[in-house]
Image (tube, rainbow, N blue to C red):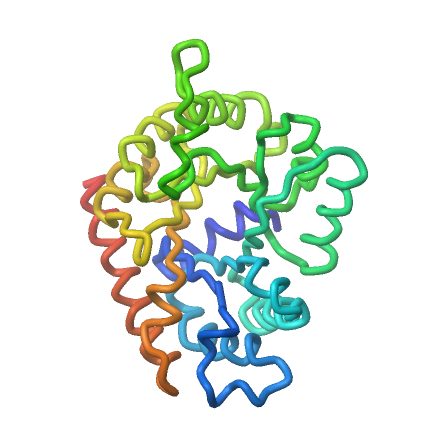
Length: 275
């Protein structure tokens, strides 16, 4: 089953557009887990067990693992999800993008070594740098379009032929790059106006939407401006606001409460948007 079909099924099953980001920081790991050989995996495992019925996906930011030499914890986390909750897809957030053999190595890293179901990629080296990723027909290829960070405007808002660069990326993603129907876009919740613009360009393409929670994105505005014609089309990610809602031994149960609240809030605005 390809990524988008898997996403569609789990979204319906769990009635959820929420993605929990497992951006697990070794420096924030609860003390009682630090004696483990794989503390980030143990932390993630408990979060996953508590939230798997509330999410449409998990997103793992690779930097939190590679920076401290905990790549094996990442492998164990993905394997655990695939074995125990196989209907929930895993997005590897690595923002890869390069040419030739280097891109092919990034493909192997994401989909063979880490066994991710989808990968974030950077389009700013052009189509040839994307093609090795786009050729993975069963995988989700999530292209950076209008990112959630404040500095995104430095380049992404530059006008080219009268339109901002992010609109050109959206147009190419929808009309030229999506031959295998496996392209998604990253569009930040912190820019709801741009969300609406990109939705108008791309139709019912799915967006990965970071920026709610710790980054300050407004859930209502993101949902109302981002949903597709059926009230879906979004993977709304929250990381720190859920996984670090508590730093005590109860962190996983508190994370469940926050995930449930966030999912229900999203659904409230989602249903209102298409009613």
